[in-house]
Image (cartoon, rainbow, N blue to C red; front, side, top):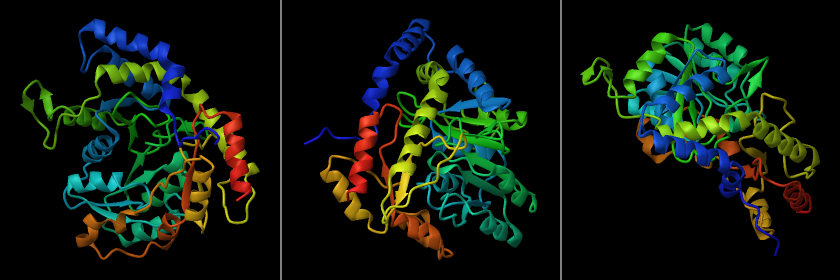
Length: 366
């Protein structure tokens, strides 16, 4: 049997970055300073510059970044926040921690991103406090359209960029459009640490300062708490140093991901498999997701051929048992249809051309 093609392979990634990462870790170990030190400060500067924002605040993980970023924008108990239900429940988890209420918006069947027309209807209904736009699977939304729709209701827009590090549209990168944005640096992300990590980026100094206080107990100075809702959520020096070592390589990795995705989209030709269109720099191919009405049969066929797959995500937020008591929820027909038919194929920078060809062959011969 041919060697297995994994959905992702962090061991290959570790091998390709070992020299730079090892030097970064050793530098931190020698410094004797492991939290909120020089590497953390340097990474915040460098990542803000990369994103095209004025401020970056490192936090412990991507979900904290959503929660603390939204809290810094004034979202709290009783707030109503528009979001999608097909993105793994991360925003919904953050909203629950805030005591806020999700207002689910259905998605476009092709992009799988929030449908601006449906968002417009929600905005027109009023009583909305914020919008969280998720750049799902690495595709940067048409943010000019989203901002135009949200502005009709005077609603702040927050970007969830956990899957879109480096995605660019009209010269601007993900995270630079909204009032603030969150990033995750979980190891499988386009820019990943050696553990959990996250960040909030923003062009608003007051928001950045509020996040800085919230990530460390709400302190305005040591042991003096000025902001409620704070916690211990700091990006440690080891993770910051690793991310600094990897950041210069990110655009190259994204280009390779995009190359693999484009080849899939051009060469997978099967009447029962629908592929994404070929995109430009607005897509960083964090995940490559196809649609098939016979998903389980396709998945079994690929598994037999030693090609591993996954489903991102099988249970939409409005179908999660923990949210049942907050319903009934409005119908989300596109979201439900996609949840039953999407399938994620292997797509990561270290995937070889031969492996890509094997994936394509096994799908086309299904």
